[in-house]
Amino acid sequence: MLKDIVSIPLPVEETFRIRKNVIRNGEGKRICVVTGIHGDELEGQYVCFLLNRILNRNPELLHGSVEIYPAVNPLGIGSIQRGIPGFDLDMNRTFPGSDTGVMTEFVASALVSDLAGSDLVFDIHASNIFLTEIPQVRINELHKDTLLPLARQANVDLIWVHGASTVLESTLAYSLNAIGTPCLVVEMGVGMRLTGDYGQQLTTGILNTMKSLGMWDGEVLPVSTPIVADTQDEVIFLNARCSGMFMKTKCHGSRVKKGETVGYVFDPFEGQVLEYVNAEKSGLLFTIRDYPLVDEGSLMGRILVGGGAR
Image (cartoon, rainbow, N blue to C red; front, top):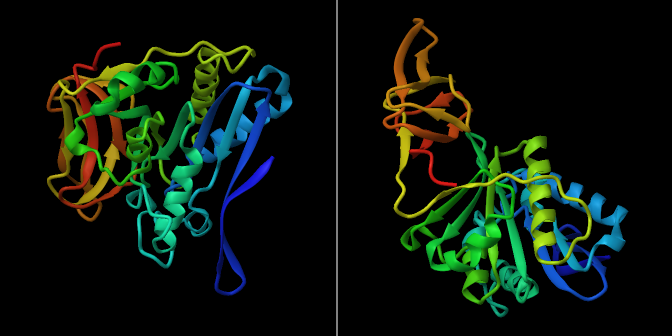
């Protein structure tokens, strides 16, 4: 059942509309799958497609309600822009919003109100167009006790627990967790693209989580045990020391040793290697740059020192 959450008239006979698809069978718990807050992050669209197909083909196996929000920033998705076009605004910096505020604040408030009270919300993101990420859940350490057991069910490769000081309070996830609605932030893949394997992986994780909550009677493929990077773990950021073109030599998800080369920056005019990007410590390369043009200071990758614990 399709339902409008927000419908606001715009100029030139257009409408800003946020919709959700509600799939319900009897009484039970409620989970929500949200994606498209950033219009250039499309990985979650494939998860919505897969989840809808599975649930619609097997409605009798569901107990409770699954609500799917494929495009909470529809104008951004339509124009492939990160923020809300015309407002020059990152939607994920407007929460919890205000029901008496301007349009963007009103929309944010309406979305939080609609999601409030869910047993679990998946807030699905992709990386930007420059970087590729392994599937991961990012958690604010303030809500670790509630979210970590849920994140372990989600079939991701990594759970990254952030310090409270690094988490923005204006995000959807923070606003929901602050009012007692558990919300997992998923980051995976690359901007403006779909990674089929990652979509399948997370869909399996959502079904597995539903099964653990008593919401799903269907079969679920085996899920992986994630690495947990807690606040005491060290994440190394690799940044370019010069401008040029980048060729990666290691893929995201690789284990690298201290001093090992993950890629190099080259000069196409004179055929010279300008810089070898080497791992400063041994660990898991969970982020790698895929967009080749780099400037001095550009992020090239992230390494979880030691590879974390499972």
